[in-house]
Length: 425
Image (tube, rainbow, N blue to C red; front, top):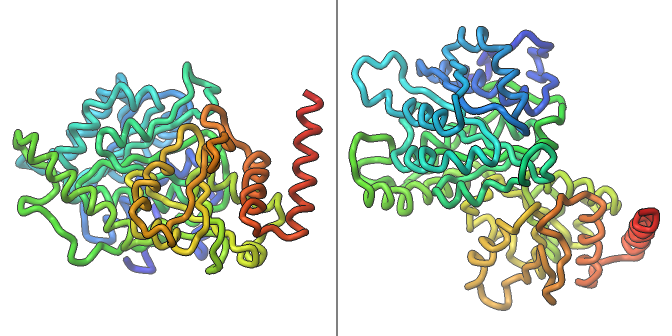
């Protein structure tokens, strides 16, 4: 990717030297297809974009932003077409990945975004499942952008949609910041093309409605395609063929392993806090990762203090299927892994499966929703907050005998504050 690649912008303040702009999470999702178009154009590809879904919180403002920018998007061959409902939108997205199979195609491929909230994921399971198994086009790709409403603020139920996508064999990325929306979004398209899968993209209100200064240069993300990756003889991309068993074999034996290979090659799962000293390893993603970062600040734990105490934080970008090698490397030498995730445990049981057969001397204890005694420490039915997480992290550090007097003092102060709040209630 050329360093001189010029950005495609929507009339906003853009620093051409630094490539920075102030965006909300929703605005980042509008900009994302423009960045993909610019990357494709720089690579000599004549691609188009297609976006469809159904309005509703927590992605309710997305279609309004898209509608506002519809003419500008169209100038770059990106079409926004709201769906009558979520499943018809997903069916149309499925169709975009088949255009290369027909004569007379005007573009080298169509990259597509489906959007909807939790109930839309549920009702659209059929076209999502079939589209994922059929495969994407080589120069297309699909992002399944789903808005989850963990607190149930604007929905009939509180959503957690990644289990439904996992049941349909769709890998899921979970961005934690507005910058992640852009970076992981571009990786999501690249991953979709490489492995021939639809890629889930989990969003929540707390991040969508956050604004921050981000880098929007199209060449910010550098993609490394895995070497010596194993592909089936007939490839992983879309085909016109009724082959249910073949589709399943391609997904299980090739596509999902290719997803893991891509994540490894691009280092998408990474340690964000702490150093090499091991003791307590915290595993968290998305909004919960931001809450953990806040909680560590509340405990007065910067990187130097975390290293001193033997505490580190691992942030998977891919929450299903968890990539095993990076997780095992992080777990090595840890006495305990603490999983911090909202709603029902999702990564925690995957990790237990990945780590179960490690030698007992190097296998860490796993806690999350419950501790080693089976006592609940992080609820699975309400939204977590940084104060609550800070108390749990402090308690786990203390239980491992890693706490020093400064941490004990800070933890005592936070505990008193928590009791005072409960007393006022």
